[in-house]
Length: 151
Image 1: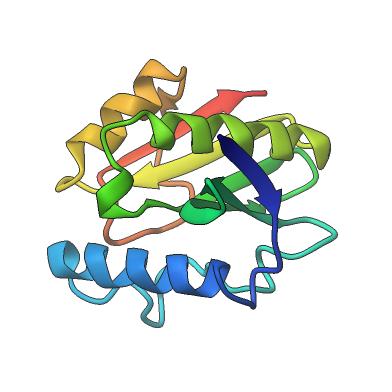
Image 2: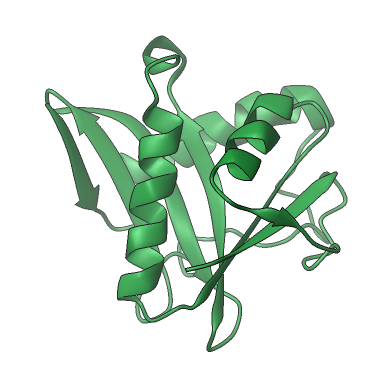
């Protein structure tokens, strides 16, 4: 049974999932949590403008991601991650759906996100979910696709 929970971004399992995501993606691009890269801090994922969600499968944290405020209308979906042993089951899409629902609950009308050239599967998922390509809205030096979707 899959369960979605809003969790504090500065506590486990959120911190564990973000650390695993950063470590895995850093193997593709080099460290992504460096000065000059877009922020994705626990404060960014905290109320009133942000949230962090974790997907649980039979009580085990298997995926997580955050909503970060950009402005009054737009948010950014960041640090989406599915643990390797749970991949291939549609949890990435389930997480994206939950994050979009959370963004709506927070009052956002637009969701933005990005991904890099070494993650074409993520870009395909985002495009299938209705994200249209836009310009580099966040000056992310590691991204090659920036997308936006009306919520």
